[in-house]
Each structure stands twice: as structure tokens, then as C-alpha cells.
Length: 130
Image (tube, rainbow, N blue to C red; front, side, top):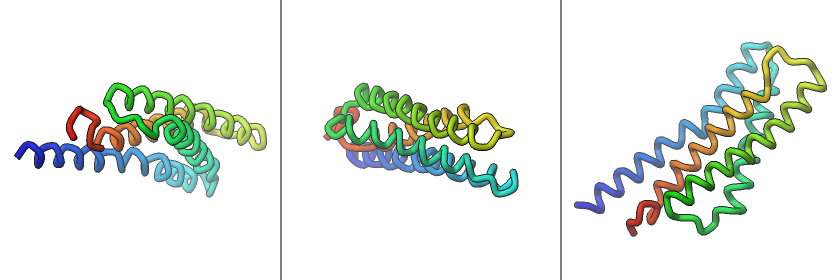
């Protein structure tokens, strides 16, 4: 019965990560259409996703334990912020924005990092179980 409980909690963690991965894109499209089809936040969401994904995929191929997974998610968060901030600054230079883009990029990167954290913690071996 212990395996059933472990499987159930792993599935719950995995499912909890899905809204964190989808929220930045949903928020970017929602805010973009409320501002008159200004989808610059969608580009920032893509940039935050790409920055997080690159760091996580390059550094985390064999990371399985919970403390290392948390550090990897933190690294992905920093990478996501860096790429999103670069894109946000470039988008703000081309056309002045009513919204501060860099904080949105940080929030999007945090959301992707949390999604990654939940995904990795749902895998076998994260808490010592096999």
C-alpha cells in the first residue's frame, strides 16, 4: 500500500505543476488582449520559459534528489529571469510600454521554476523512494 501512496503523491505533485507552467502564457494572452492585442508579454513568457528550460535541461540530466532539484529550480529561475529581462528591455526600447515588463518576466520565470520543481519531485528517487 505504500507504493500506492507514493504514486498518488507523485501524481499530485505532477498535476500541481501543470497550472504553474500554463499560467504565464494564459496571463500574457489575457493581459495582451485587454491592452488591445499587445502580445509583448507573450514574448516575455516564451523567453522566461526558454531561459528556464535551457538551464534545467543542461544542468539537470541526472539530478534526482530533492535538495539538488530545488537548487536546479533556483538556477532555472535565475536563467529565466535573465533571458526574460533581456527580452523585456529590448521590447521596452522599441515601443514604450504602459506595463513594467521586467517584473512580469520575473513572475513568469518563477512560475516555470516552480512547475519544473514539482515535475522533478514527482519522479521516482526524489525523496529516496525507488
